[in-house]
Length: 135
Image 1 (cartoon, one colour):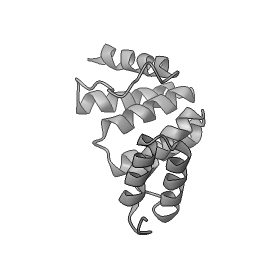
Image 2 (cartoon, helix red, strand yellow):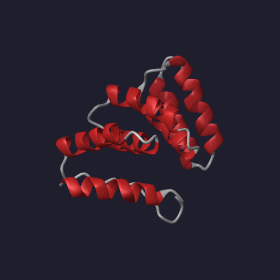
Image 3 (tube, rainbow, N blue to C red):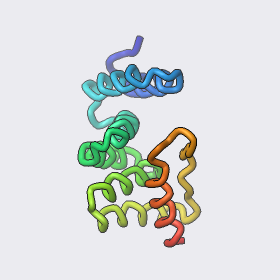
């Protein structure tokens, strides 16, 4: 049971459900958490990842923009935001997100790509290549 006022509880429960393979339960938990805390950076970030998997790039970019406002030091959020913007054809905005990463950490490498289970890993490889060209 999650306290309705604790967005971290919803976020943590969603991550646990996802880890246990209950992706629909995780998604529903994030959605419920967002009804109580619509600007919580962790909830928006994790929900945006589901939206990216569904090719809902506009909504994902909006969620990621909220997430990065709440946690501007989280380079993974900037990376996903750059990816969503690139998928929307917003090259300049995408480039600015990637530049924010290199400004904060020139040696950043996105570390969560599992090429065996993620059929979209080639998109992340393209984004990593852009970052490496800037270093």
